[in-house]
Length: 248
Ligand code: 13P
Image 1: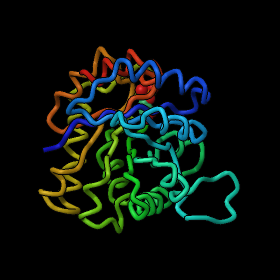
Image 2: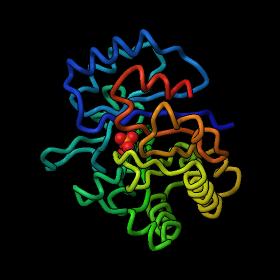
Image 3: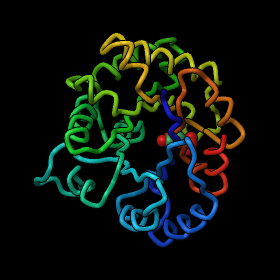
Image 4: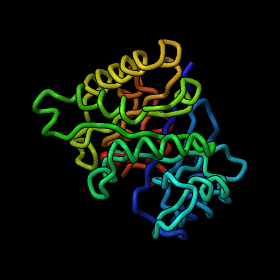
C-alpha cells in the first residue's frame, strides 16, 4: 500500500535562522503518523534542518542537484555532497527550474539517474502550462515528460521515485486544479508508468499533486484514488498551515 507523502517546497524562502525557528515551532506541533513528511529547503538551510529534525522522522529534501559527482560546474551542488549531510530526497525538474534555468527532460533524466545511484530519492516534477491545457494537449505533454524523465530507470529503482504532478497554471496562482482534474492526470500518469514498467510497479509509485495546495483543499485532493500526497509551496512556509495539510 502506498503511504501518503506530503512534502513542503520552500523554494527560495527563509534564511538559516528563519529555518531554525520554523523547525522549533514545527516540532512542537508535529506528531509522527502514517503520513510521510519532508521539507525541501534551499541548500544553505539543509545542515541546520538536518540537526533540528534529528530523531523526528521528518525527511529532508534538496530542491535541485547536478548530475555529475564533481567537476568544474561553478555554483552547482552534487548528489554525494547532499548525501553526506543526510539529505533523503531531491526535487528534480521543478517547472521553475525548467522555465527559468533551462532544464530539459534530458538533464532531468540524468539527475534522476544520479540521485538513484547516490541513494537520494527523487521527487520528479512534471506538468503542463495553461497554453498546453487550453489546447487539450496536457496528457500527451505529461506522457512525453514521464517517458523521457524515466528513461533508463530500472523497475526496482522506479519504485523509489515520487512523481509530483504540478500543472504550471496552478503554481502560486491560487488556482488549484479541481480534485477531478488532478485525479485524471495522476491516474493517467500511473497508466503511463504501468505501460513502461508493470501494473505492480505502477501501483507502488507515489504520485503527488502540487499547485496551490492549502489546508482548505488538501483533503479533497488527498482523497482521490491516484493522489498519494502533495508537494506544497507557499502553504509549507508556515508551521501551522503545513501541519494542517499533513493532518488533511
Ligand atoms: P504553491 O503551493 O505555492 O502553488 O507551489 C506549488 C509548488 O510549486 C510546489 O513545488
